[in-house]
Length: 358
Image: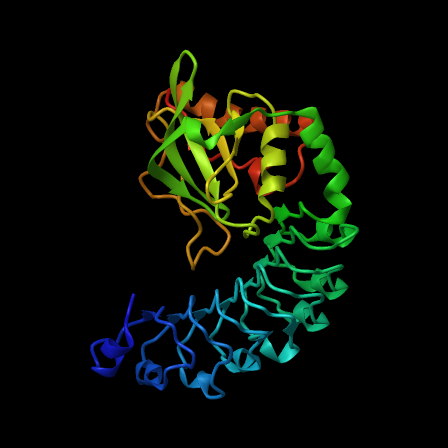
């Protein structure tokens, strides 16, 4: 995190990434002193409602984040930033997106948790678009022109007001991640999932939260101890970040998790947490054995939608059984998910997330 004082003293000269969260109500003009180096600008968590008309002076700017601010519209000046490819305005008050606000190289647009009722047809001209995050708005439909975005790989439209899923979405050649739970057309599926897979309620007082294990778009997972009448059990507890996340509504994700059912390679739900002092929604799950590890990390700014795999993660030289398990487990898991007809949310993705020891 950087400060305005550091910027004014010239201590940040030459940096490529600037992050300021200090109650800003206006865009600091001192940022323009970084025009020859700045590529990533993060002004999230301030009180900004506008950007300066001369923002394109930051001629190397590739990424801008202005989440958790009171913007009511996506600033049109963004469309004049010729190198800008990633725009994040999550949790603002944005009700309008002008076609002029869309940069020519835009490939990642985050407008989660705003007040949008429609998108401009011109979004279909964003030929580089790969990732579009629109969960938690008031959209009743998507512009059919979006079908022209042939590079789109990830689309999150959960928790909107859509009454049908556009058929043309399933024709997009690269679309591999689609989250649409929490829309009216999915309500019946979600209600059926909950009815067919009742999950016990677990009082918060029975849990002793320990250290964090990881964090995703929708929540933070902690190790915890669950008290039973006959002893204790070490578990994992997912605390959802809010009423609306990038994945949509916590209720929808929990419905999918519960409906997924039992399978050796699926982390099923033990119970749903009640009586949290801050009314935070949470889910209790089995703790994965420490012998397991993550195959990959989350997507980077460069990879956009693709998980990042360390070069050291390889099965080369491993025993033959490791190869067999690596090939069999994703296939087995996907077959199980298909048989359950699970609600389509990121929770039920068939992408393998864990490596299995031989």
